[in-house]
Length: 77
Image (cartoon, rainbow, N blue to C red; front, side, top):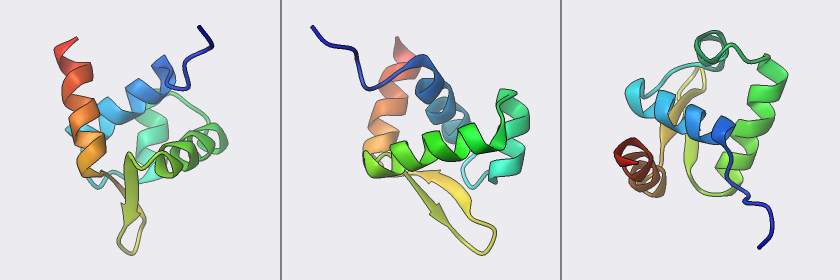
């Protein structure tokens, strides 16, 4: 089998957004101890996968319905 396209880093982002809907990138970066550039790249990947969306004036990060399903399965694992 090939390498999974979903890794631990993305799972951490999904879980943090689930706990803090609308969190801004700067705060998410601090909480995850991740460089903003790296985080923005991962968020772009997650957005492309249909798992997150950014809304609002400050670009808050939210889970999509598919992201919520994934977050629930991660938290139950």
